[in-house]
Length: 157
Image (tube, rainbow, N blue to C red; front, side):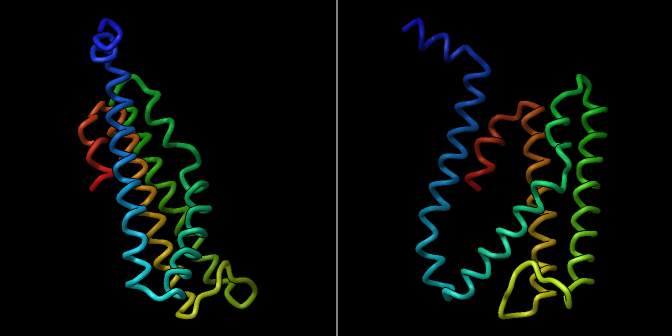
C-alpha cells in the first residue's frame, strides 16, 4: 500500500499516467475508425490521403526547427510565450516557402502523384502541416503549464 500511496502523491507519475492514458484512448479510437473510413472512401482516395500525409509528416519534422522543445526550458512564462510565437511563425513561413517552391518546380519535380490537382494537394498539405504543427506547439505549451486534464482529453477529442 505504501508504494501505491507514493505513486498517488507523485505529481510526475500522475502527469505521465494522465497523458499516457489520453494518448492510448486517442490511438485506440483512431484504429477503430480505420475500417469505417476505408468503407467510406475509395482505395485510391485513401491512398492519396496517405501519400499527402506522409509527405507532410517529413516536412513537419523540419518545419519548427526544434523550437517546440525550447518552450519547456525558460523559467518565466513571458520567455516561453516568445519562443511559442517564434516556433509558430518559423513553421508557418518555412511551410509556406516549401509549398511555393513545390508549386514553382512542378514541371521539374513532383513530391507525390495524385489523380486530382497536384496544386490542390499541395495546398491541402500546407494546411495539414500548419495545423499539425500548431497542435504540437500548443500541446507542448499546455504541458509546460501543467494542464494535465487538457492533455488527457485532447487526444481523445
